[in-house]
Image (cartoon, rainbow, N blue to C red; front, side):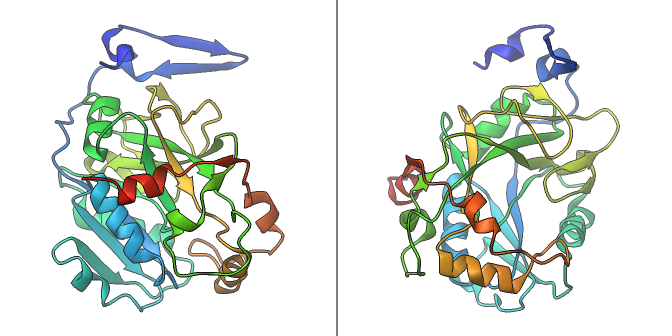
Amino acid sequence: MWRLINKCFFALLLRKNTFIWLSSLNKRQASAVSRVEVVCIAKSEDPYIEEWVAYNLKLGFDHVTVYDNGLTLGWLPSRFPGYVTVVPWASAASQVNAYNDFLARHGDVDLWAAFIDVDEFIVLKRHPDIRSLINECSAGHGGALAINWVYYGSSGHLEQTSEPVTQRFTRRGVGIDPHVKCIVYIPHAASIGIHCPALKAGYVQYDCDGRVFSGPFNKAGNQDIARINHYFTKSLAEFREKVLRGRADTHTPRSLSEFAGGDQNDVKDTSAIDFLIGPG
């Protein structure tokens, strides 16, 4: 069992920051995970989204909701009957609005939801499925479970090919990135941001080790229990297309200079594709 849960109180002083551990808090009302969904906003993701949906369903998500920012994904539910909802969402730079539309539609539902992008794949290191991860790490507290990014680079690819993303890009950076994305217990959320929610009074955001923190960064995070593979660049040609299509969260344009920062290829790691094509 997760040993932190069995202890009464933990506090760690690191420099001037005080970290509170989830196990030190009184349990809030959140039952064992009954339903878990994944939510994204997508624009020009047609070549990638089937792989992403299939991966998340195999991970154990019950349903996928896609806010279709490019109005091109009406075909997607027919590929996964009963498992995918596509919401037409044409507004520019409206990722946060889309997420909060989901919250408005489901605010009273006993539901956990991961708010991630189509270039992000959750990788579990110790748990067989996403529900098991949430059950153990949340320990009945609800709130929001935050998972750190790991950057995957181009693996030397200059052009796009037809193979799955997780098969083409198998090299990542050495370290964890401080950015997180969250799986949110929807009844405890006041609003949803791109990286993390604003939670109602009395509820907290924490990482897989039970460390409570707020905001989109967790510099103390690790990938021992779970991580998010962030396929930020893909090939050089695909990154050029990404720059041209702009962002879902802001009107600020991307720059081709961002490619170098995300093109991290230090370690070969095939965990995502191994999971996707493996048994189960």
